[in-house]
Length: 368
Image 1 (cartoon, rainbow, N blue to C red):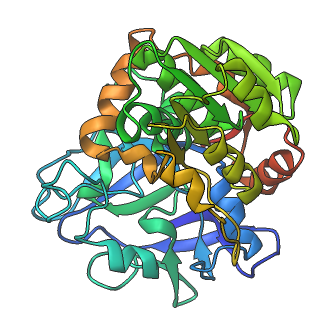
Image 2: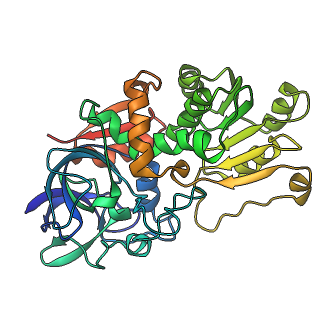
């Protein structure tokens, strides 16, 4: 079938919306009609060329939600008509990682995804006979996509798909960082560095976990006010003295939990330093640029601080994303403030421009 999609032709150049060919789903694959897709920082990061694992040409997009249109042979997890969220972090349920509670990094199709292909090592996307690779196994900057069934989370059909799309990456990453990776304890103090999509999700996750004090740090007063709406009790405009101010707020000890959601190594360092001596945990959810390194002073660790990385918030997507969406539908998570702009597929580059300008939190592509 012919579909319209946004293609990354060359790093550092605008995406080109054009007609491409999408072939039928194969065994254990599913055809999804996209209804909404968030424009995520990861898409912009790859398009810029900063991602050392990026590739082109490919169809970008990974924060999608839609409806199952058709299934291939041997598909058992979804059926036509189901509402789904696309998962760049699949869950096969069978590999050594899926069977462990210690990680969410499914190994079954990881190598193929990283290379831009579907599980059989080929693609379903073509343009004038030339193969186009699949971004993160999803390629949701398109009217339709073909994905492995293990990379789809079946969700409540009553959930608005424009909001559900945010759970495909940014919002779930922040929520999961607090709820799954860090496992924030009731009555604790948490500090979140960065009030973008991931950081605001971490604020909401810390609130859901019962943190007594939640400090959010950002340079934007407008974003800090959004953090207040998600449960932040204290707001700090970031600066060189941020760590000292956090120490002053915590009797000199630091926070029980800190979360880094900016991708800036200088802020990662602050997040480590601001973690409580003795047991403080710094969870890093931001993605640093190519070639950047975080310098950790051994003294910080000897004093009992810990550092954890968090991919997709440690969530097992098919299991945990539907649960988070149920909590949204129950009124525990406020998603509406995150959707700052509604755009069309043809305006996808405008979504990147808005992100560069830090105008709003998330632009969502709405498909007709």
